[in-house]
Length: 284
Image 1: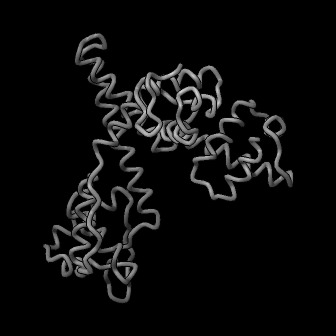
Image 2: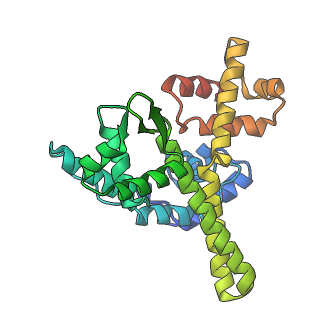
Image 3: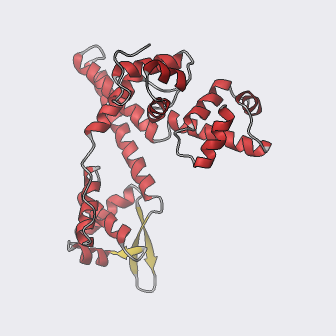
């Protein structure tokens, strides 16, 4: 499983990712896989957590996903100049790059940066210097994806537009649905052209990639492992002490491998330092 001429400071190669997948299927721990590849254990754990977790890691998907993310990187924007109008326009431009319609992005930025928690259509028309019809169309889109809602003001007989509290979660969910649409249309093409045709094979790869990406974004296997880690923390709290993996497996009636996977992923999961320290103690 040793990689040829490994470079600890460089990016993982496709062959190294296949070695990681092989190591996981053999039941090797992250540290052992890292030793065989001459890589830091943190590199291996991040790679696995970022690409579906130990139970769903697939080498070729991880390699394509990493390449896809790298191609989408953009140079960092310069720091704000102090001009709030210029800042708002840059903010909206970044949203547009992410697929949000331009006018909807501008409306969302106005709501996000306003002193008030809501704005009326007239206030949006005035601040953006556009027609009421443009605002209405943008509002319709943002309502449809759940990123804002209307609140009536009976005293002034006006509609106020309020940004959803979980606006970025809504944006994430919309992106996930888009990926599912890509996967669906690609799968339809596989049936149309035939799985053995050149077009069918290309479309099958596309369908597999976007289906897995959508699954990861909407709470796929990687998220499930983090949920497992939080459940283990709850078991620790209930017991009043840190338990070893075998004991936790008995308490939760889970396979020991599931416990160990959750404890490994916890090292790179979005948990607090205190939570990670407690879980790490249980893994020792």
